[in-house]
Length: 124
Image (cartoon, rainbow, N blue to C red; front, side, top):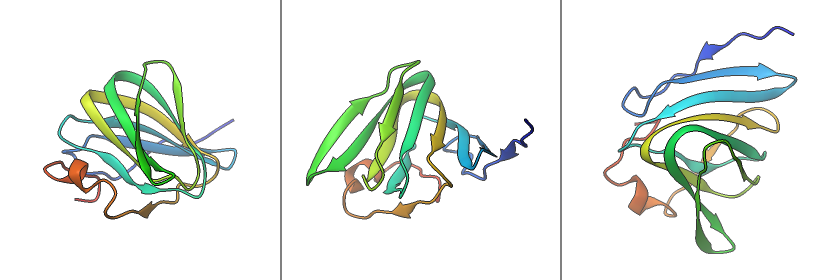
């Protein structure tokens, strides 16, 4: 069972990120700093997030409304395929994330503009 952990290029102001593939699934270990965000996108696969350390929340856009989910250390949160989401840290966060397949994302616009404004994102 061998796999190679690689840097996942990211904006250093957002935090460091590492990635690997195992059994056809994409995995990442991510640091997300206060004042930044990750996401503001949607995936064709379910995304699983395990909060290792820190405090933060996911905001989702489901059925025409915004829903907020506070992450809890040691618990897995699932962002279902096709649901736009954004991670906003309330203190520096470390997460382990994986997807039901490859990492494929499509940026969304207009849903989380109030959360993106004044923050640094991975593609900034």
